[in-house]
Length: 489
Ligand code: MV4
Image 1 (cartoon, rainbow, N blue to C red):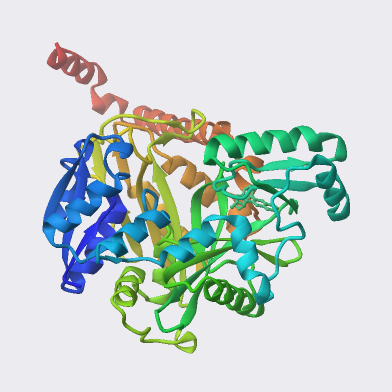
Image 2 (cartoon, rainbow, N blue to C red):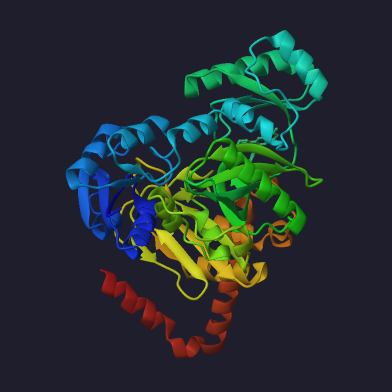
């Protein structure tokens, strides 16, 4: 592989290019109107304009991406995450054009894209799954019978679903018909596929995922877990590795289960197997994500493995150069996703320009971003500005580095979720590790930040007053105010 086209934008496009460059591979960026001035365009060896800003007219148009690859002579395409990364038809088109898709085969993408097909595929492998059915269900009478057998609460899920869409918790028999109807119509309109199934609802789970890596020779390893329980409406906010709750024994069992899931779909490349962990530390397979994930850096930091480099090596037909016994966890990593959203106003998207943009830096700090001072955050795409990642010998160290990095990260011109990140890092439940997927819902309110801000302002006012009383005469306040006033006129 001599030249890779990165079919993505922003931080992940830059992230992929960095590894390609390290390996001596040329890079091709693609961009929309809104991204003309983006760092990922300047960083690449070549860049191809795709079209108007909306992703439906640029980053999602398979033919345009393929044409850009052919025109530039790229022999590999890395899809990043989002956009076309889990589109089996795209992977197929790339393959047909004799270009290497840096990701799994279309078959694996297709199987894991359907939760029911995924359950079917892993059935033979003895992988723990939540009690439930593995068939699409439309008949209410049958659904009632199954729900009674499973026991309430149950969860209705869309087979094609993702991000919690088409998911309904049902507390009792009476609610079942209406909730089922809603789940089906939601799945129908969101995915064009109304297939739903029923599972026992795990009420307070942790979301733990295992990173896997597979080559084309049937070698599969896992790179341990990422804890992703701190989410807000199915949007991850803070991720970490390792998880504070896994014992070596559970970690090994989950890792082995994840490897089996990868084998069940003949997986190739980097993938992620998602599990729920209940209060008794039973784990259950949920689904597999057939792409490089946003939160992959925490795994890179604790294992020392460059996941993008491995993706490329495996894609060009190399054998994995290490085995499971070569892998171990060293230290602890935390990732905070920084979004252009206002945590004081219901996380509404915050449009604007990065008037000030000063990055935190130092040992143990990694910032994966795709913007620079003076740039606007386009409204057309995901509003993530950056991933702030810290690494320390212990969780406490990584956490302290995160608090410091948040304080050093100066963004003006729009609201960001940095204050929310500070809230999480200062919260007892997060510090002690006693949290689940309901952390944000259970503990967060805008008032929590406002209260703290008010307390800080009061301290500042008191310090100011003290200084004034001590040195007030020397400060010549009247003159200072006057000159400031006149200079502004
Ligand atoms: C569940 C569950 C509880 N019980 N399945 C959410 C999205 C999709 N990936 C699966 N999800 C869940 N499946 C059973 N049987 C709870 C969730 C869930 C969740 C999972 C992971 C992270 C955050 C979550 C937030 C709400 C619900």
